[in-house]
Length: 183
Image (cartoon, rainbow, N blue to C red; front, side):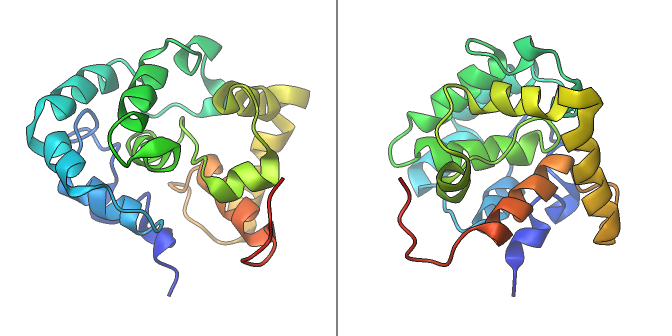
């Protein structure tokens, strides 16, 4: 069973108004559908501690309902609230870039893409994945963004599935079998 199909929509989604600016237990379960687990001390700090409070403040300054293709570059650039949130999460004990990215992708699924080891293997290590993907989605009058939306429609997926999630699944499906060594 492919549990990742529930990532964006589990319990109504992480971007819904009531929970958009705070991490919930549902968010922690949602990232587990993508085969990662937030370490228990970090999870508790996200739910009840100062880490959760700091991230809530940052999330308030990251737009909801915005596609990466439509966002101003300042929204995802180094130093932005999104970048600060990612850095704060990434630097937590045993979290790293994969879990940090998946947590933020849960909270802003249309704006912040998943960047994990498979995506890194397939697409490399750009200086700024978010800004470079944003540029790619906007090139040629948004051709890539529109292609992802066409793929979503062809697959019969609901419009609530983000273009970024379609891109993530497409990369995963095209990735070589387990055991493939990445450069």
